[in-house]
Image 1 (tube, rainbow, N blue to C red):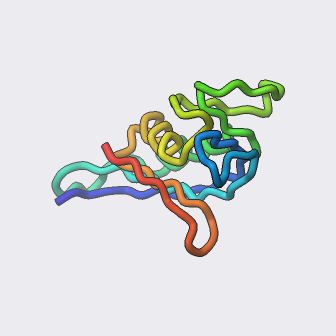
Image 2: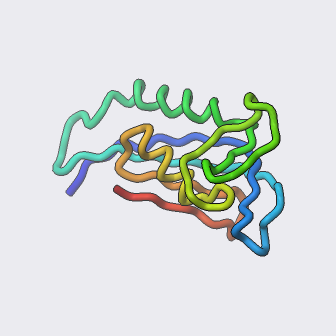
Image 3: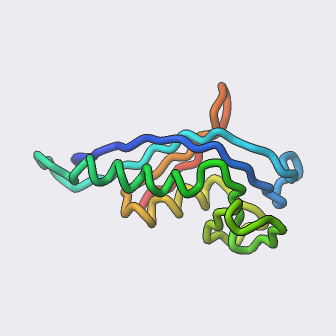
Length: 126
């Protein structure tokens, strides 16, 4: 059994996943992000939800409206328009984004979902 606090937010971003034959062009997404901070067993308080929520809001505000680039990608845009995510893929993947957010928040898991019916979600669990 675990006790968890889930946090939610959203961002609107662009990326170019060059590894994808279907989507290997610059395009945008509205991502819905869910992050969960968990502890084994039952706990009356897992984490200060207000502080954790503020950390997520601050992080997502740095990404919102930007071009998300993988660290392996060459981007010819002004620095203030780009947010770089550590990733070895040729273009940012949802999997890399989920791991990056989990690492920065110390989250147990993070789900990154594209908006729309039938759209994929990407889950990273520690």
